[in-house]
Amino acid sequence: MTIAIGNDHAGTEYKLEIIKHLEEKGYTVLNFGTDTNSSMDYPDAIHPTANAVESGKAELGIILCGSGNGAQMTANKHQGIRAALCWNNELVSLTRQHNNANVLTIPARFVSLQQAIGFVNVFLTTEFEGGRHANRVNKISCAG
Image (cartoon, rainbow, N blue to C red; front, side):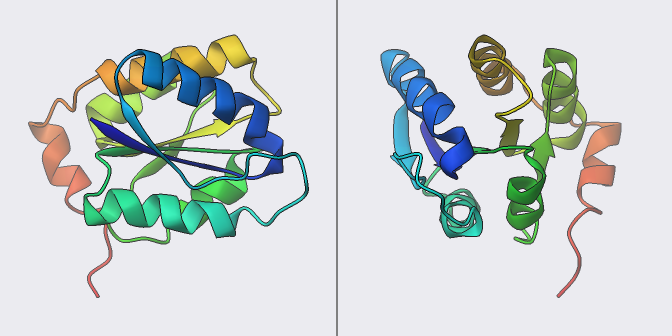
């Protein structure tokens, strides 16, 4: 499975560790974020990450910024993206089960690295339940 990942300067440390973790588990990672702590504009990394998921180059995405809000707002401008901002495992699980989220948003300044890696594990191993949730998910995107 291929995972797209993008981040701004606030998420660099976590992103690098998440990439290492994913590669150790056998995932292919497309890195669209910065690898430094120098200030950068999060949309410059988030749009390419969302494009990779939306186009099918990656099955899922992970995005990080300080609060997670800017990254999530940017990703959700894409019609084919359902980015979820999560700060605990229950939210990660529910957003996959009920909302079929295809991008996990991590607020790097508000969770620990250990928590963030745990979120990634839950995100990648939790399946969409479908059923009654599918009709709702199908109503999320705006018709163009």
